[in-house]
Length: 191
Picture 1 (tube, rainbow, N blue to C red):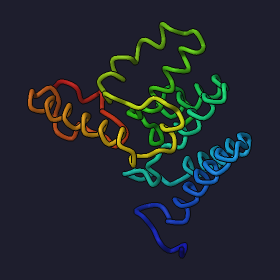
Picture 2: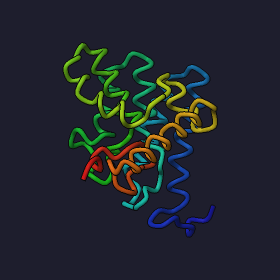
Picture 3: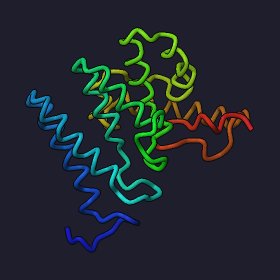
Picture 4: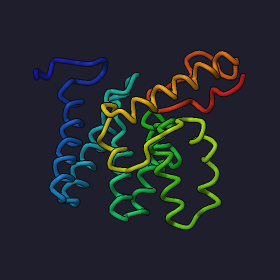
């Protein structure tokens, strides 16, 4: 790919470098080499963080929710919590443009980390948002990270989400444009 190819503000090679890091992480995950997996995902995370600001984002798949899910799966709960907090914009480690406020996967992972750390009172706060954001969500972390939209359960969840959106729109509970690529915009509820 020539360096002169751009997708809005980002070169295609920069965007594909993030994809390569995530793909290498997936390969190492399948091999059971978790330290290499985390190194590749952190590299992809760094590359993603350093992409020039763009709307929509140059790389749409938040690397931190994949990293957090696999850290959580390996029992590295504190590290996973940090990844989720950063992705959701709950700390000051990222610029505002890099936050994924509506990332339902990170929100679920964040709640799961809080539960595992025994912080149940904090874990209860985002529950209404999770219930509203995506009914019928698949919770298994491996599927959450790499399964994508190609399986039947995810397709059915997407259809239920769309039906819920349409019925809420019809009842005038939300305004048009409420859906977001990674979940529901909770700030758009009501008027």
